[in-house]
Image (cartoon, rainbow, N blue to C red):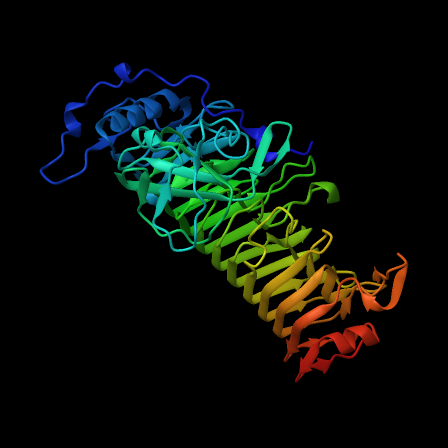
Length: 512
């Protein structure tokens, strides 16, 4: 059975324990200048024996610290079991979750750490908030201006506000806004919400909502081992300026992030296990509302195989996330057949120093821009650099390398740089492309130091209709503008049009 990530968690813990049950432990009294620290075993009765269900004790500890405004939650060496689907550790604002490293183990089921609203924040809830009209914004603004001055009373310093586009993709159970901006309010002046950080990207047509109680801010998770054999170690659906670091994980993915804004995860050692039943997911799923998410210095060991229809991309920067940084990540999957390595939508993402070893893959990169009539940020491109993908199958080890497309009428792919990337492997029979300008006008594209077996190709079959409505003999529907290949190595160029449409500098043809 293929498990869809949005069906995996139906809203987190179905019943949160009463804060009245979280009595103050005498041992938790802090020294002057220190954060309140509690021990989940000593102070709240967690067993840590690997058998007892410790969910209630851990949730009571979290509610206690939440009532105090934050603190430190310590998991001494032990094995803390969360028994059953929906019994997860709720990540709360300003709480530090930590242990003794590899010997402090969280045993989850469908997920271990989840956000305050479980899966309810993000795409499944963007349509449900009480939105207020606001003025258009420009890049560099440090405020949101409310259209109705009386709405300012709904905010105070420290609140989390989201601004989103009024236009969105609406599917059953989901709303995917084309634009989401999450920020912290630092002041209210007249009808203006003063923001903690400058806005990166402007947008016209916006509404805003106060989502403070649905977002965890200022938390950290570190020095823990987190195991969820049937799910996600981290299912974070609303996070602001928080950190996950120095952890060991096991599950069928590493994390699913939605609205993971100005937050980071780093120095993680992950074991990921896919199964023939279809239990799989993207290692890094970075979705709507994630802005400036940062993931670096992560090692992944991936084992198992799933049916082709259940192969998720390893790295998934899609659904209107923006400006993600993925850096220094290694994936060892020598016995596994993968689909996509990177599936990325335009959004100004930066991906660098990635090493992947697999038995075989379908494609290295599927990069696309969205409907130009609806999406205002197609100009935000991609920088992909220092990527090495090695496939070990003796023959037919990959289908395609780097594929760029915009599938909408008049759509462009803009501002993409792919630099110092190598695909090692043997393409099978037929036409396998190393670089493929698949659909859409391609504008401002640089491939520099890209190497691998496979051709360089573009779509020459589609022609622009002439005045009579018939395809013109000479005008390509998807021309290349300002496209350069420099210091690249490939087996061939597929057409005269491909030869004419791009500029080639110090490129070499490999022998078939």
